[in-house]
Image (tube, rainbow, N blue to C red; front, side, top):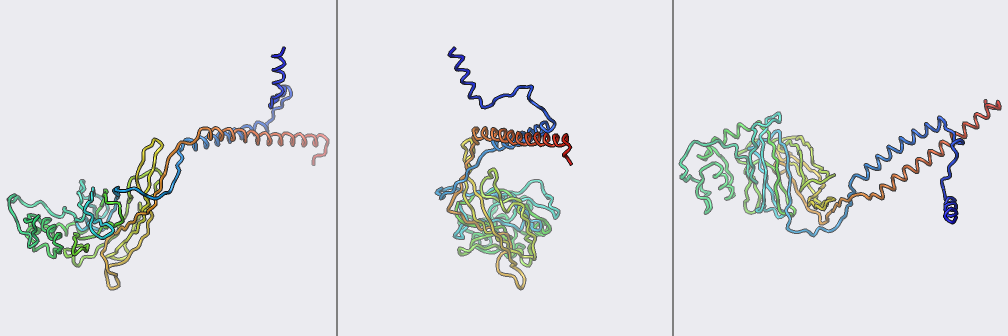
Length: 387
């Protein structure tokens, strides 16, 4: 008896009393509201599920205290009107001195004027050097020979058996190689002929280099570079009288590895020269960034902003400078940290319940309004009061 009374009392708390089946009325309007509300429920449920399955990224900002890291620079630049034999890439730190502790993995790909590769195999590029592909294979010579360096010998390099050896010896001395035709090694290897053959070619420079994580710059310009009294100089004597077209397309430029959602502002930038002998300068502000994935893996990378300046270095009204593309970068003292996290399942469940309950409630109000309105109209028609 007590058990029966307990269940009778429990039934009083039913917040969802049921009507008898005989008193339920099904209408066409209710069917239409049900179908429309069901579609809305499904669309919003899919949207909520998609939101739940995407990872949440939390940004944080704090002072960069990291030390001893390297800065990786990823490069992919095309010069459609500049031959690989003319171009050299140099990297310097904030003091203007060339980077001595630098690791480069750069390749040069010769292109024709239509942008197609001339050779299938790209050439390895060394920092500070123009293309060595300009030199043809010399005839067999005595491997034990010791040819002259034309006054540029030093304790490390006493023999210059190739044109590149002579150019390197001159570079270390800080001398300019004014006329390669007067150098027997260059004459024998057909250096001038090869340079002339590449005159109507383009070049693609791609790969990466790793430098010390300090402010500095790197640039791509014609001529072999060398240091002369602590001043960075490019040997332009071999190109005297030439006009350089510095039109370029930056396919990709980034500092570090990519992470989800990163934006590199210089990707796919195309600059067509207004005149010959142009100098393009890109001033870059690098923000160190860490990205921690949901599995705990941390990626150390960078994002950056950039501004551009260009000027002419040739002609009567031209300013002083070296034609080429220059990238100057500075490091921000602040670091951005992104952390991935999985969204809360309880939040997802709450959202789904809110969607179902909210649409069901609104649909019930709409259905009730339609049903009672139709009854009132029908009654007026019966009484002849409808106009």
